[in-house]
Image 1 (tube, rainbow, N blue to C red):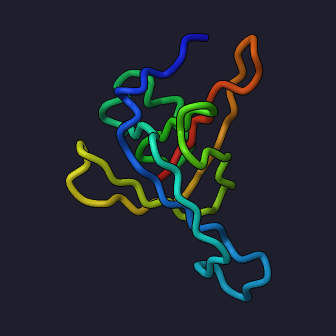
Image 2 (cartoon, helix red, strand yellow):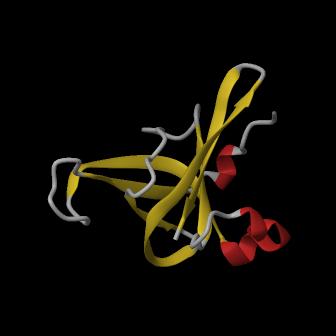
Length: 114
C-alpha cells in the first residue's frame, strides 16, 4: 500500500473522548490533538461516498506514521477538524473508524464523521 503523501496531510483534528463515567452524553474526559490528517467531505469523495457510515458527512484519514498523535478515535467521540481548505472548524461525531494494514502492519485509519 502506497504512503499517503505528506503534502495532503495538512489538516488538524481535535478529538474529545467521551467520559465513560458521565451520567449524560456530551461529557468528555480527555482532549487529544492529531496533526497531519486529511479531511474529505462527502461531496469530495464523490462516487465512493456510498461507503461512508450512516450519518457521516466526511472522512478523516489518519496516517499511522506521519500523523502526529495518531490513534483510532472511538465511535461516539467528538472531532473538530480544521485546516487550510476548511473555512470553519467542523465539529462532528465519529460514526465509524476502520484500520487499514499494509505489508508492514498498520498503514492508516479511516474515520467517518458527521
